Structures are given as structure tokens and as C-alpha cells.
Length: 131
Image 1: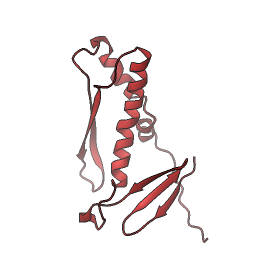
Image 2: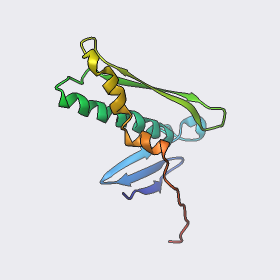
Image 3: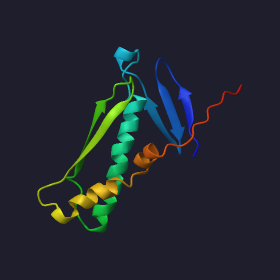
Image 4: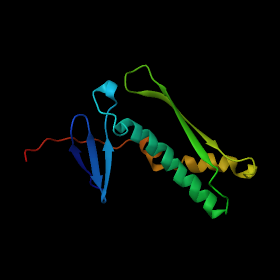
């Protein structure tokens, strides 16, 4: 997959891929205009939404309604600046959700490719080229 990253005005940075544009910005406290989420917030959102797509697929296969299922993601900051020490996901299901599938929701959440890439991170290679 290829993405083109462009540096827009002020602290805005955008990612372009597959016909989509993901806009990012920094909050005003960080010198930005607060017009879009920060890149790190998209990183966290990708973890939660990736788990969500696996949960949704699991439920669809079993004809379990998903409208009232939510995932609440919380983070704890680590001792090093910019690093987290803990990410928790609380899968909230309605009272009538089949109890026998609760542990399965945890298992399918662990199939998330974003989470897997955190456990086995890829090699990063960064270069600079003149246009």
C-alpha cells in the first residue's frame, strides 16, 4: 500500500490513499488550529475500529444485532514522554447479548491486525530524496 503524506497549512498534515484524504492537525495548545484529530488519535482510533470490525463480523455470522455494542478505549500514559503504558478496551454489550459469546468477543478482538503489528512491529526504513 502506498500513501502520500502532504504538509498543509500551519500544523496540518494529510494522508492521501485509495481516493481518501485523512486530515490531521494539532490542538491549539500545540500550535495547531484544532481542525482535525492529531495523528496519534488516529492511531488509537485504528486500534478500536480494527477490533470493532472483527467483533462486527463475529456477530453478523451469528445474526447477533450490533447496533447497541460499543467499545470504550482508554489509555494510560507511560513514564516516557509520548509513550503509553496501557490501552484498555471495554466491549460494552446489551443485556440480551448471549453470555456464551462474551469471551469470544475478546478472542476476535485480539485478531486485529493493528494490534498484531504492535506486538511484531515492522522494520522502518526512512530516506530523504530530492525532488
